[in-house]
Length: 308
Image (cartoon, rainbow, N blue to C red; front, side, top):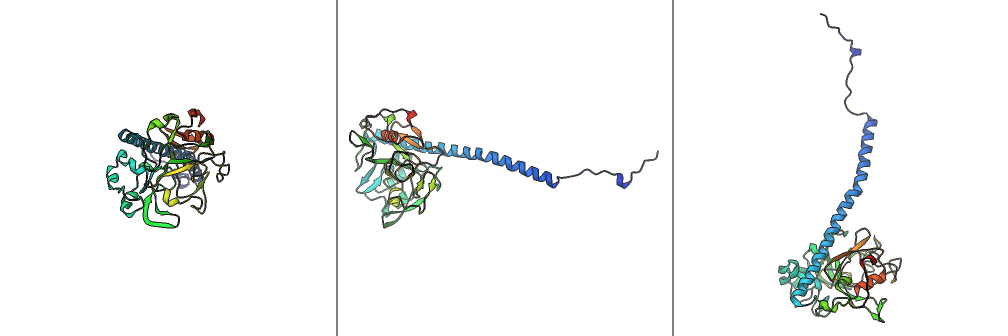
């Protein structure tokens, strides 16, 4: 039986690959999928960073309570002669006894003898949502530079409350005392669940207003290299801000100015730790008067979580 022989022009070949138009369509679809997935990935990463930040504040609060159990009081917000802040006193209760033993309590935090401790990066004092991550600064006060460096802490306590908020005609009292005095929880007569202790104040030493970094970066932060290392005072005088985030006022309390305000890099708010050991997320819409009232230990105000 004879096979029929096909002519060359009758042979059909299977096409392999894409045309240019098909390739462009595929690339466009992939680009759209990436664009749709990227916000979800970023949101998941921020959720993880916020959870870690919350845990850092929680661990710090546990350190305060363990200090209270051992010494019948919270540590002072700072000592003055010599100078160092509350973070140093918490080191034994944050699984850092070696660092505490290495810190010379008879020397200032900025002295060379304490350089090794000041220049130790501790995750527990750093919020991973901050723009700079773990970072250090030269330690100085005004025009004086001490020649040592310290890693910055993102969590700070109040040593004063701005006199714009008065309780019975006088400025309110924050929790921690100064000059080496321990504060018993019994002095927190507003209630431990009604009184704040540790607040996010991230982004320093750079200067931020409502999510934007200002230039020059340090122009509005007083003695920035003195207050920011975690071995330093690590405290601020809380105040409210006007709508511009610059002047003192009653429009904004959270994420408006990291000079003397609560400031985090989480969408919509910042983490705040209470005297009872709980961590709450303060919304950017929290009223200045409410945040002030929560910062007082004995103002007599009664509030609920729905207020902030």
